Picture (tube, one colour):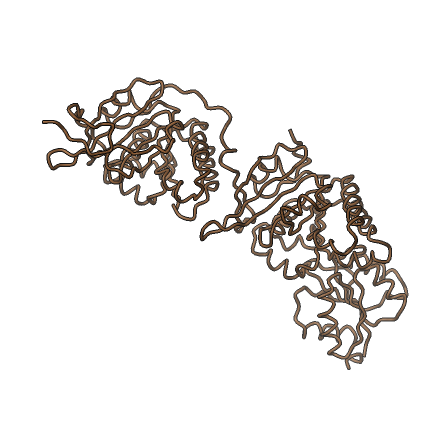
Length: 118
Length: 480
């Protein structure tokens, strides 16, 4: 089981991703923008970060830039989940909204590594 | 005059005109209206039209719609550009901002929106829906929030646009309207079995906006507005001299040489008397003389009019249509919106500058427009729209009697000239006749002129001198 942090300003979207990943056996924590995500990461270790791009206070792009510049989180697997068609540099994978639940599960599993799959 | 650089175009040139030049930057605008009236679409349309990489649009949404659904709905419109999402336009969830603000106070939201406005230098900041903020905090704090938001964003070059399902009563009472520089009220109201979308600029500071209710519709282009026809009329009518011949020597003699150029003429007559043939002949005669022509028909299709012209032997009419010397504007007489008709007419008048214009007939505008209270002012607008663009106008109107019209519906003051066509009973035969009821400041004959219709169009015959009841409603009887 892995702990996954979902960062999205849409609560409904966070709820959907949470459900998909919890059904796959993962523990899910949430943040509603980039700044809140940094706070979460300071409090607890996570194995995968799934983030939106367009968010108030701190965007997903800025969040990724900060994490990559931070030695503690530089190698944290990051999946971008966005309605924007523009790829985000330094993310490990980019998925467009709307997405297929099975596709999300598969990509999350790949990023976590085969051992992380329950 | 408003500085165009300080205005954001809306994507509808006529809506810009209604607003007095577009959405003013550095101002707070509220778009209000009931569900389904097009508020969100208007805000998004302005965002897509104006946002650039350097000056993006920040679009804050509430709980109303997930972003994926919102974007999917937008893809039906021409202005939508998928590549703009996340680059030129950021869709941001407002509740996320409010969640984070609960610890630091609601005023933090205003500061964050201001911070984003300074940092990103957006062309516009949208809050959709601002009404959803009500009930989250006490009214006095909300009032302060709207004041701080408006005053801070007002310091930037961005337009702050707030969208909400506000009722007319709320427009008068809610705090966001006290700080608003502009208020655009949208409506979608049933009219019989159809619906009419309309908008009204309740307020637009520093703008020469158009007053009243203006129609709009939603199509692939998004929101397209149609200013009230009364506001389209040029301020001055160019004085013209000379006559526009009617294509028949007798008719020209009856009218003192043809219709005075630049005038509007009303042509009354019962069904089947030949109003369309006379009108088509008027345009056809102009084409021969090199006049640009426009025929607005609410009865016949262009194909039917061409067929009629061909039957009359006016072979140059289809050729003129092909070459662009003639335009047909075919308008369905049902489900019509008077202001859409006005804009369609104006567009041809501006683009082609026709010298001769026929509207056949105005009765359908009355019936199809379903706005009896407004009909005469609308008719005034249409008549003067034509005259104001330098055209000589001929407007037909069907009478319910076979003889003289029973009522002119107080319309005659709108027209410089009035011609009447009527049937005349004579020895078991029915004749056709035409006369002039009125020709302002112009010499003309007062007799009735017999006419016939056949190849070549309307051909006048002799004057009906021995008749009585010329001004009555009964059929005329020629004395033996």
